[in-house]
Length: 502
Image (cartoon, rainbow, N blue to C red):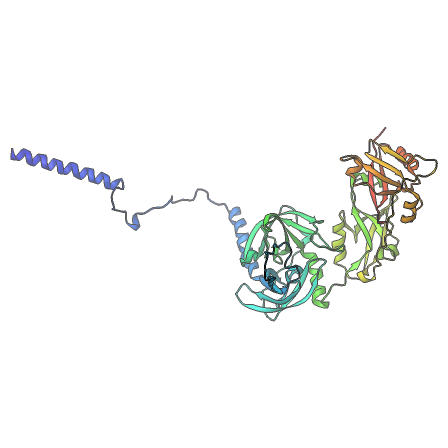
């Protein structure tokens, strides 16, 4: 009996041991594995990088390592020029105390070292109205800087620090860049120093963004989807060889003012031309052709006899300006400048911006079905006369004797009427027709004809009245018509108008 109890007891202990062991194996209790026994993840990467992929990644790493020391942070104390109370709700104060706003404000941006002895290029808007400029290098040294010169028309500036043996950036050739190629933006966005982002070139020759509030402002930007934020201004846009191809300047942003998809950089070829003058003279003495220009669309090309939309149309000449002296005429189409093809106004403006006053350029012109060349000696801006304008008067209902006062062209979406005698006196013209209505989404509307414009020429013929204009339109059925129109300030321009067939 005693022996049986002993067997049962031993069996119970064995069963209990098995149960406890199982619980320990399943993690029950406070007993944990040792550090050496812990294994995390698997022992092999899911993908083995080939040589091409590794080399591609290495290019970004090497560019970041080499170029980042050539980018500086610029801190600026500047005069406060904005109205401190603008867009603010001032609470009622029975003691008539006004909030005291500081007379100065602080901002920051980026810059690129362009010489070993301390010249740095940045944006004009970074150092505008500066009373104090401080430059911080990647090695944490800081220097007081002097503003050498600024060029508001390109938004560029040069500052100088007293330093030697600096690592200067390699400035590339922005004429060789291609849409789709990889680029990196390096700068100090949002006060985060030495930040690198990557993307591609999304577009080149981007203009008409309204970033420079001046009629002579030059906008010809490289567009990129590499993230650019406030503080990146003045930093570098570089290719995968480490060459600086642009200076980061602006962002496409919502109300918050931060990156939402695209940034814009000034092409480095323009930067090089401007900075050389700023370092040499402290200012830019830029040459001007003395023309108002616009792009050529399909209707305009057909109306003047071009086989396709290309070149730049001369809308108006500055009296006594470089182009007028050289024999350029309103209505000419500029095809090339110094044998460089130009198809957008900002392309011509950017090229001319690299030339100083007194130099000459060769323009290839399309005129009356022929291609000719003209040599134009560029004048300085101060030597270019201003364009004079004439104010328009009232629009009475007077009509030219013997002709209908108004005609509508339904297939074009255009209604015109004869000019009143007072219109002619005020505009200092003796003929023309007034546009009184343009249908939305019509041919006329698509070509930017609007109510209030005066048509003074059609098909290079003087328009006497509405019947004369109708005759010219009828002769161009199924083709296109070149119009010269004038606004209520006396400014004229050319437009192309497609005319439906019979």
